[in-house]
Image 1 (cartoon, one colour):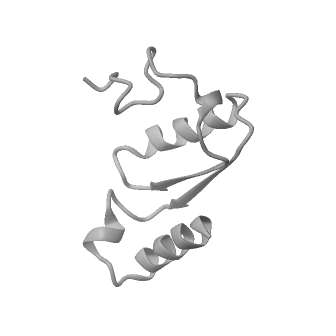
Image 2 (cartoon, one colour; image 1 turned 180 degrees about the horizontal axis):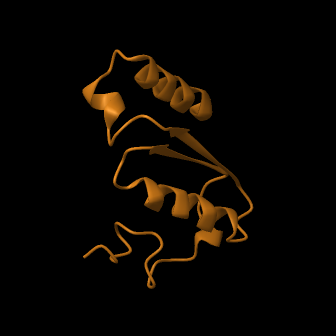
Length: 89
């Protein structure tokens, strides 16, 4: 179900977010996405977990789920891909 820790890091049985095995994390959300709130909650939970890394949220308000995959040549898709690429460097 939706509270399985394999798909929901905020589930009651999920491992502690304070022990994430990375030094930085980028949470991307789209404003019209039905999953937007979960992404924001995840960002807030990581930010408040005591994790020692750097967490950022990137939001494009006027977009829906997976917009950058379905409409690859839009300005917002370009902004998303550029932000992801710059985060990885």
